[in-house]
Structures are given as structure tokens and as C-alpha cells.
Image 1 (cartoon, helix red, strand yellow):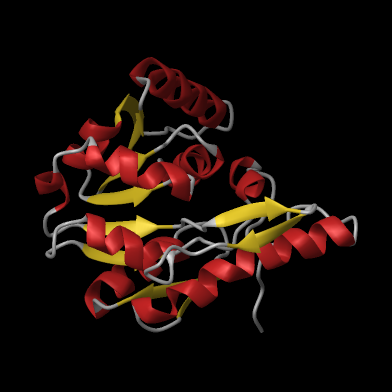
Image 2: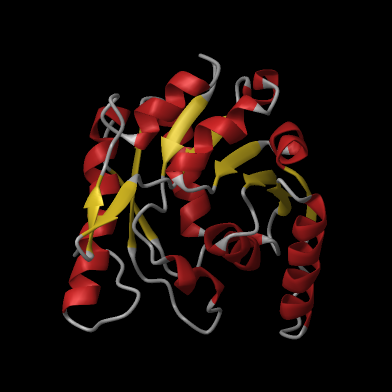
Length: 219
């Protein structure tokens, strides 16, 4: 499978590429394609040092959306609308699009969940994409830096929401290929806001208790 990552040079985009480019072709997108090429080369070198052949290349965000069989939107929420506005919407038709996006603001030293009028980043993003797009939220609550720590076992819970059950199952299957992640069905997109809001909660807990890179583990 080809997985296009919009905003692929950030922690989550590069981390996903490090974790699954031995199983899938990863297409890292960026506003600056040279930066994406540099990131892809860095990922392949890091994997080669571990005896792993990584299938990863860098390009523009538009090409990542066009060429991907599945597309990940790995962007801060405030940049999602402007980035998607610059991509041909036809490139998203009938595709699974994954949103790990959490709308947050920092105020008085803590992080607050700050959803748009639609109620969540997921519901806002759904309005920006073609009706045939199959939007799924996943990977929202994994500490961004831990993706690239290949010696770190990711044994966390991945809450997955979508209104398309088949798309949800495909994303859950992808999650199961990553370290020891345990995907769970968290319902429809109307519940995405609850999942997104857990991220500022974990950041605040980490900050207030001098912990690092907390993620969600449900047992």
C-alpha cells in the first residue's frame, strides 16, 4: 500500500515512516519538497543502519495526496485548512484519510482542548474533503516524539473513530502492524472530539508531574 503523509516532515510523519516503510511505500509530503526529500533520505539511512530496507520518498503535499492509496494529515490544526485548500480535492476521492489532529491552545501555562465550531478537528476536516472521502481518526494520543524512538516499544491504545466501518477496520489493521499498538473501535466521528481532547490532558499531566511523553494505555 502507498501511504501519503501531508505534513510528513514532522514528528508523527517521520515516525510513521520509520515504523512502517518496511511494509508499505511511504510518500512524505511538505510545502518544501526539498525538506521532504531530506527527511526521506534520513529515514532510509536510519533504517539501513538497522538492516531494514525502508521504502520512502519525499515530495510535495499535493503529490503525497495524489499518489497515496491512504492519506495521513499530519499537521497542526491551524494549518490544515490552508494546506488542504492548496490540494486538488479530487486526489482525496474514495480514499481513506487519517486524522491524528488535535486542536489545542496553550493558556496560562497549560494546554486546553480548543475545537472548532464543528465540535472536533475530525468533523471540521470532513467538511473540507469530498463526500466520498472515508475519514478516520487514529494515533491522536501517542506522544509525538516516541514515534521516532525505534528502541521504544509503542504498547499503547489507539482509539479509532469513523463513520465508515470498513475504513475503520483497515486503519485498525495498519495500527496493529506498528510495534505493539492496540487499536480499539471508539465509535463514529461524533466521538472524535473526546479522543482528541485526551491529548492536552496527557500533556498537562506530564507537565504537572514532571513526566515525559505520556501516551494512553487502556486495560
